[in-house]
Amino acid sequence: MSLTLSLVRHAKSAWDDPELEDFERPLNARGRRDAPRMAQRAAAECAQVPVLLSSPAVRAITTARRFAEAFDIDARTMRIDARLYEASAGDWCDVVQAQPDDGQALMAFGHNPGISAFAGWLCDELKGVDMPTAALVMLRLDCARWSALTPGCGRLLAYHRPRDLDG
Image 1: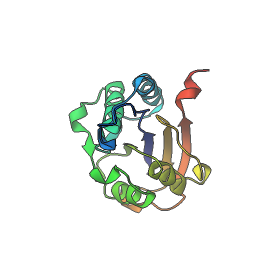
Image 2 (image 1 turned 90 degrees about the vertical axis):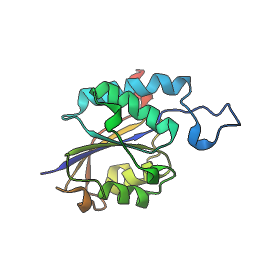
Image 3 (image 1 turned 60 degrees about the vertical axis):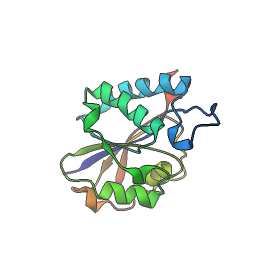
């Protein structure tokens, strides 16, 4: 048995309000456009409905909600983990390894540089890849339990960026 892990970097956020803390930044117009488009792409390609896991930052949760809509998932069932805000690759690994084995598909939403570093840790093809905003990585993991993640255990199923949808 294998697991499927999808990693989504939050969509583009606004920097125009100097009063807002980084944690509170909303999506900007491009982010509001890209998040649902990427969500539709994910829903069309995922073999099963994933469990959603997100950083608590506004831009990550807002992105995750667009994916919940595309998958027809009640957004209130989304798992929120504060460790994913400003997470390193090691933090990402700890959070994913701690997930209950109640589903074979997990989709997690977060931030750079940690999410890109984690993708590279899991999949050699993604080493050194800097995921742009709203990017989606889909991996098949060569393990049967989340707690069994190891470096290089991921096989790349898909890597999509918003600009790929424009062509």
